[in-house]
View: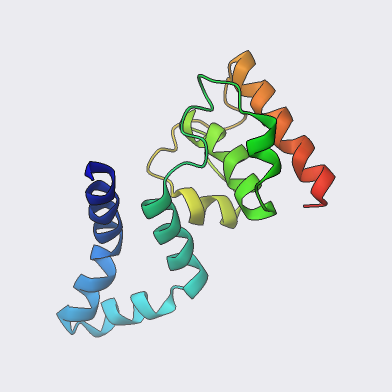
Length: 132
């Protein structure tokens, strides 16, 4: 119950700037909101509601059967959420749209633990097998 309420609150907060600009009547603000692509809003909303694919991937080895059940989009997110949690700054639009830049604190490759590197290798292997 708490998780559902928290997810709804996070989703609402993610949409607040869009709502405020829409309701303000400010033409410049409205133009800014309209300039966002639907894909940008969708990525942010999905991440805000869904959260991490594997929340414990920094502390637990990801089960290969769970990895195998994911499609290419979720595999990409599962791999990159490990980097996100370590403060990685996504240079590509896809990563910046999906994860945002608020957690970004390091440039270059983040220092991953051996367990995190192993999880990244497992997910990358599944991505190759699926032709992602």
